[in-house]
Length: 464
Image (cartoon, rainbow, N blue to C red; front, side, top):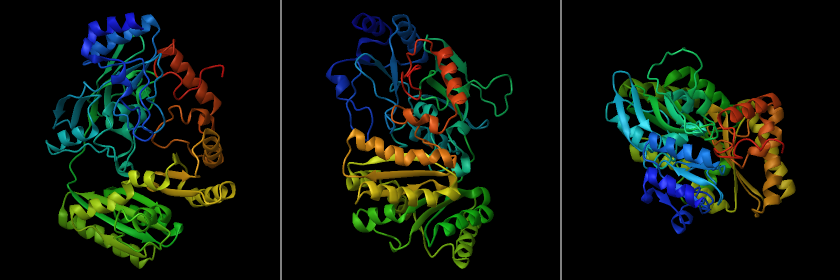
């Protein structure tokens, strides 16, 4: 590897090839805090530099792992000592903002928040939003097809990308920087890379679709007396708010009570005795009509008794306080550690039964175990945190089987928005058919015949 690193240094500069303690001082994800174990970290400054680095790695049969903001939760950025980490931390430029065409061209290492701010500067918005906005990168968002809190209105990251550029395993640059909403000229090649977790190519640049501004927010926290009431509320808001509904975030009592009453990390805006709590948010252009529409929707929900209590945010600080309860992952970690986290999706009508059965199974196998549930219910996405008191590998596998196995029968997915990485790879067949997995292997062989890109992530080595 030393000879290869000298060649790479000639391309990117000595200062951009990190080795030794400089590598191990870095972490590969924020949850585990595990150190980076890569043989070196390479920091290209452009697509051209990355292409040359990959040509050298391809010739040397050197495997690589791509690093973005390292906010992932499925061990997708882990690298062993015989692998190189390719960090896009130098490729952060906002290259162009087209206000008329509503597009933004950006390098893949740019943080999501900087893209949001660049769009706001020209009176537009980039619709993707998630709690890690200050750390996660656009390349990582694309590679994992990120979701977040506004999927119910704007869709996943896939819906926000018009074009992209990627470097293949052999250094070939595929530049498909389309800026048009309509382009049916052959295969839509960008879709190969969105959600592929760096296994088919390394995304370097992208053209993002921007949206008109919706500067006025109406945010409320409501309590629901039953799961039937939760789904009734979702249907009611779909009819009364229509396209302005931007977030429908449900917290089971286990989540709400833990982060308010039990931990005292947040003041409970509503009493903690309801089984479900929902953060509702709508976005609009006209403050008066939007506020009236939201108020009427809440009044109707209270009258029909799908909501038993509600509090409406009257200021930005009050809105932030409501969202802080939902987004306080640090609080969950402190309260439940050691914990296992899961990101799943399943049909909304099946959620109550699924959660109830899972809680019962955990109590049966680990008396006293705790389970906390919240998620983007309007998108069919739940986040589950489980503490059994042990984090050993055997316990993890046993808990994973309880969480994932029922999803096959329900038509659910082992990953809603976090990806597969190493953590969920062995369960992929619960959510994909053998034919689908075979086709994934075919694509991998075609684009990366030597298995150099994020090897063993998403797909198990063939023959295993």
